[in-house]
Image: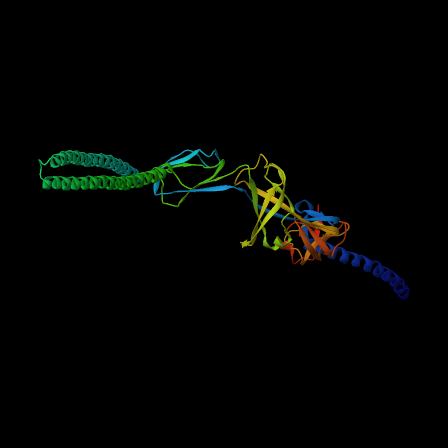
Length: 417
């Protein structure tokens, strides 16, 4: 009976072993899968942004930021040292050519102006005095001429009488000769007096000319001082908007210092800065859109600055139509410049930290959307919010657009609900 019992136990043991092996294997596989799930990288779907790969025509755009500036601007500077004592218009205020922006005062200029007025009055008084003196001197010389003419006439009459008496033998010839000599001498004196008076007139005229020049000089100095005083009242000089006021009340300024800047509000242009790396795509004449935060307006590229500042260049955009109502000088704006169009290409919304013309790894979702695998993708041209895909992924595949730099060492990310 003992031998029979041993023979019956062998099949049961074999059956138990055959059943236990699959159970153990399933348990091990289940534990490994569970452990793998617990240690894999996970992301909640609502915490990430997912984009779809698309195919079609892609408009390449270059974005920039900047401000609206007046095409016609006027910089107002101080002509003389002065002190600001009144401000009438603040930045943003609309102005006309005669609008007074601020008033200044200069005590030294006021003193110079008073002295110049006194000097002008003194020169005018000297001119009148000299004119009267010249008239008096001329009258005296005219009186002398009249006396000489009278004496000459008397001598002529006496010589004629003596001539008659000489003819009658009453007066000797010597007296007649003497009278004739005196008459000729007096006639010469009359002639010289005429010349003296003419020369005196020329001299008086020259004296008055010099005096008038002194008056003109004093008048010019006074006019310049009046002009300088007038410029202490600072006017806009053009129609537009006061864009900048560079001084404060009570501030002392020096000659040449900036006071204010006025720009036209009807002739605005956008000066935007774009990345230096995208400058080669921009050409004069390309269409653009200016976003004033209230409306988007069509514009055109009219100038590209050759200078690079802090990795950006300046691009000038001009409105195609009239300046919009929402536009104001110095208003911050965004701009989008359409450079060209790519035909029938793959593209996707630009993932975070990706760059054009590079090969980078991004996370691409599988068909079930449960896992995102790190995939090397070649990117092409940057088109603003989108970027061209050259190779690595295909149409309708989904990629993670959010920043995944903290998972750069992971090869797979599990997407959980």
